[in-house]
Amino acid sequence: MTILVLGIGNILLSDEGIGVRVVEALEQGYSFTPEVDLVDGGTAGMELLDSIANREQVILIDAVNTGDAPGTLVTLRDDQVPAMFRQKISPHQLGMSDLLAIMSLTGEMPRHFTLFGVVPVSMDTSLSLTPEIEACREQMVQSCLEELSRLGVRAEPLSQPLLKRVVG
Image 1 (spheres, one colour):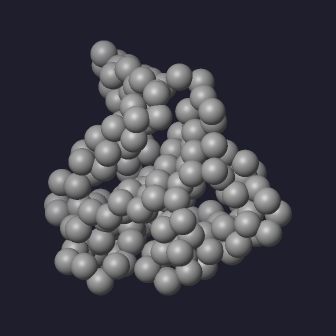
Image 2 (cartoon, helix red, strand yellow):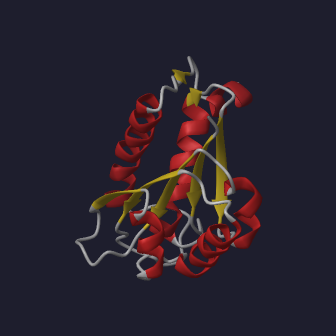
Image 3 (cartoon, helix red, strand yellow):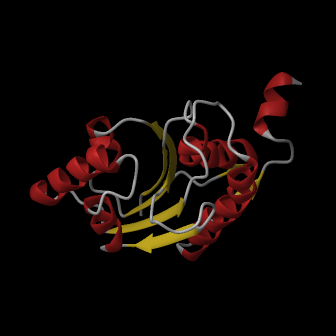
């Protein structure tokens, strides 16, 4: 089984970068078995085709605009994920929608999708998440770890966070 954990978003637009921030937290706090790839997809669209195509499982993390209250956590699975991007509720809907459409046409669509999203509070220019979305980050990390566990993947917490090991 090949599993991709993909965080997308623009870290220059505050809460829009939540997907990238969750992947950073997973990279810095845990080690994973080789079948798991963690990817910071940033604002890429079609460039992600090779990373996503033909995966057994893709876990996508993103800011989503569902119309719910800011800070609302959203979990979608399988067919709900491409449908969400067709409804234009993600800031990345154009790139991801095109990407999913091409994979559907070429038969390269991953077998399973899981999306963990959160409704952003702010998309203003800032490198920081708002306090409300920062508070959601750890919950989203835990949701990813639980999903990986459900798939039979064991994540090992690093004894020292990666960032501290590199610096110290």
